[in-house]
Amino acid sequence: MMSGPATENGELGFAPAHDIPVPYMQRLRDYYLALGYGNPYRWAQYSEVPFTALAKPLSETRVGLIVTSAPYQSDKGDQGPGAAYNASAKFYRVYSDATDSAPDVRISHLGYDRKYTTAADRNGFFPLAQLQIAAKEGRIGGLAPRFHGTPTNRSQLTTLDQDCPEVLARLREDGAEAAVLVAA
Picture 1 (cartoon, rainbow, N blue to C red):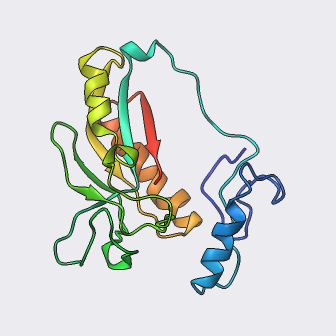
Picture 2 (cartoon, helix red, strand yellow):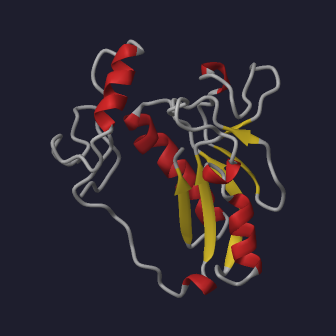
Picture 3 (spheres, helix red, strand yellow):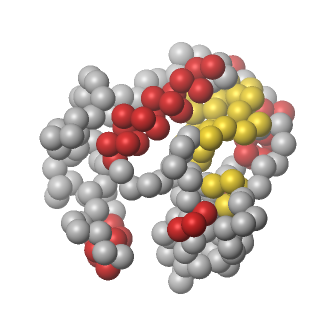
């Protein structure tokens, strides 16, 4: 298990390359190669993960939300549910917004399979409404006051060394005791 930030020498603690959970990932590797990336994409899959059991029941736990959806930017072209891949809508810094509203976030900046799915159901990539209901019904102890968006700029080192510590700090500021990560 890693004890500090990622290093640039490739010692990220990943599981062996043959240890893949879902075979369709080869299609995604091929996709990134076709986009012009010089090497096959390596999924961040770890042999050991630092997850911790909840200290108290979920109904007493304040939950945070982490997403990869991007805030809508009206000057960045089509970002609607049927939009083609839109790299201009990407973001490169962690952002936060209030959970007591319904922020306009979208996923046109992500490379998902547009042939077999759409972004029409925002609950699939941004389940804030469901978490608000869960808090109201007492299924979770509460919802953190902010959700946090983390970039998808395909740099595992940046994600590990910069984005993850930033998101963790923000979750702690919000008093979150657990988090739901929705990586679209």
